[in-house]
Image 1: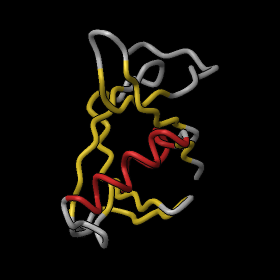
Image 2: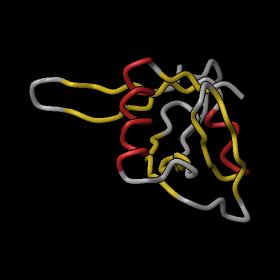
Image 3: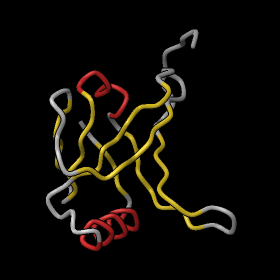
Image 4: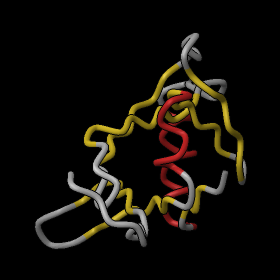
Amino acid sequence: MNIQVTTKAKKIQLAYMREIKKDNGGIQIIVESKCCQNPQFQMDITDALKESEIRHEQNGLVFFFDKEEKSYLDNIEIDYIQEKNQEGFQITQPKSESSCNC
């Protein structure tokens, strides 16, 4: 399992978790749309690992995600975007080589 987090996203995420006193918590990643060509993701901060979730630690960050969604999360990239009309975390995933009928 490989989750890429940009330096900017990591810095902002760690500062935010310290600010809201969730140093022992994690980033919950939810797969909203499970189309293999373009899955959609959501993020949240949580204190506890649910029974159906896996805990994954990488580069100083802790991630929680549903066991059944693991395949959608491999090689995702989390970045923090600051543009004129948009600011926030963005999760992207390389396009799958396979074809599907989603």
